[in-house]
Length: 364
Image 1: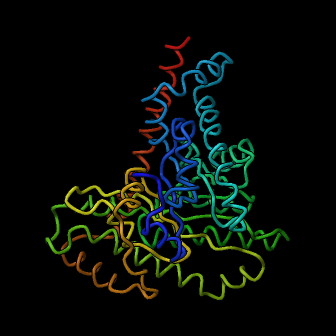
Image 2 (image 1 turned 45 degrees about the vertical axis):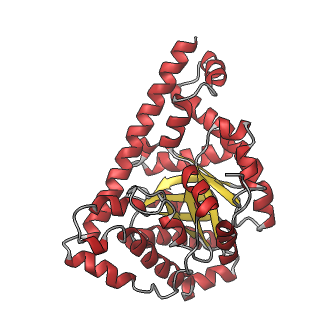
């Protein structure tokens, strides 16, 4: 892979979709690789991160050792030490994306940092952490990630009201997406009532591939690897319907900008299908697709964009109905996937902090 922009990334950009990288490492920054992805290669216009990504970046390399040693010597608590490392990486990335942010009038060019998943059931602490982390980073193009779980929704509304840009993560269904969008709208409407600007940016991250992994081997062959795309297509229709609503257009007239739908978890889990399956199939205007580095490189090398998603949802409802007939309870499965995702992030978070603690002790 030469880093030259291929036809597929260019076609996505022409369709109005942003292509983001779901990865961050010190090596990616120090080597100039991320800068090449943004400038000469692959048309990358944003970046996402999560506890698992940072766990792999910090625990499996020596790139952070000097900073871990220096910060540990200052007596920082392990969690504070991690956020110092993460903010250092993400502010560098945000600065690389700042020209994109400026060129697109702050629509694109964002990076994301997640609050501690241990705060998932504590609205006040989540809000306080979101405000503190955004202030420490000091970059307008940095999203704070908050899970769109039932417990996270009040914190999302409060953070938007407080003017903190939010990436709502761990959404799996159209219903969960609409609940997150409702929290966003309420936050903006409260700002209008308070005489504040409703221009607070947000994305709503819908996870795709985990649907297909969850039902693998449990549905007829003709439905294999079709559930994630159908869920994404249905959610896109709901997104477009919301943007056409009188409620949204009133806010837009007052200066609000859309909470963009973001397709996440778009690396394939089944080696039998094309490695760019979820990228080409989910092309849609005014949305984002964030993908692992391996998928990004594959899409730039040999990917192809299919037709843009239909405004009316196409045949998504029929496909979802077929899964229902095959015995898949989509509402229950969405709740299960969200719960499992939250538990997975907690596990990664604990492992991350343990790795940093171990490394800091070893480096003393």
